[in-house]
Image 1 (cartoon, rainbow, N blue to C red):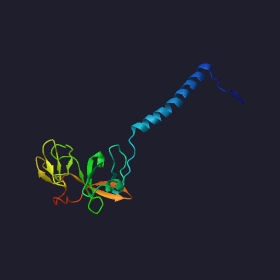
Image 2 (cartoon, helix red, strand yellow):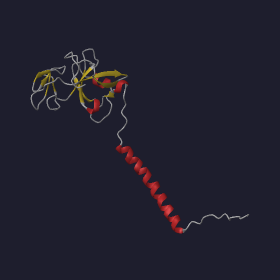
Image 3 (cartoon, rainbow, N blue to C red):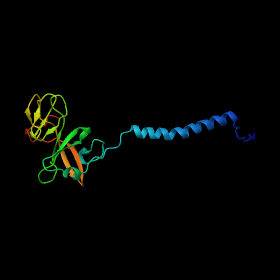
Image 4 (cartoon, helix red, strand yellow):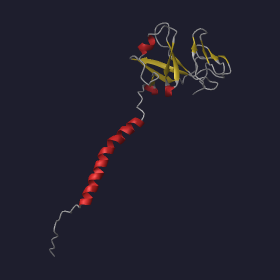
Amino acid sequence: MDTILPIEAPSLSRRQFLNFLTGATIAVTTAPALYVAGKFLMPPAEITGAGGAMLAKDVLGNPIPASQILAEPSGSRALVAGLAGEPTYLIVQDDATLDRIGIVDNCTHLGCTFPWNPLDQEFQCPCHGSRYAPDGSVVHGPAPLPLKIVQVNVIDNNIFILPWIATDPRTGKKPWWV
């Protein structure tokens, strides 16, 4: 049986054509808006160094060059956003370099943030009276533990902050935060 079926192009009705045109128009206009909204809602990728080091940033989230902090006089302390955005003090040493140890600005009593008092050469928590030595060890309670410290590395004018996992140099023991 030689039955030949005729090849016919399917006809497109006016309703199908308008539905297709409406759907295409909606897709073309909403796709860029969804892309922009997605880019806005996704946090930017963090620049990390070896071992998960994070760049030190200012209050607006911009990386801070080491030269900016090193322009301060020796012994001064600069407050930056460190690991997970934690406020961290970086210390300018007498030889115009950054100390390899940074001090996290969270009181170990109740987690308050506190200022450095240059007159008394102490970190002083205004909430409950805890005082800390320049290296972050407890001078006066109610804080039960020394301040958390982080490792600070300067590479090509970038300040990288890493978690401190080695022995705490102040106590000679394993850090309490590890």
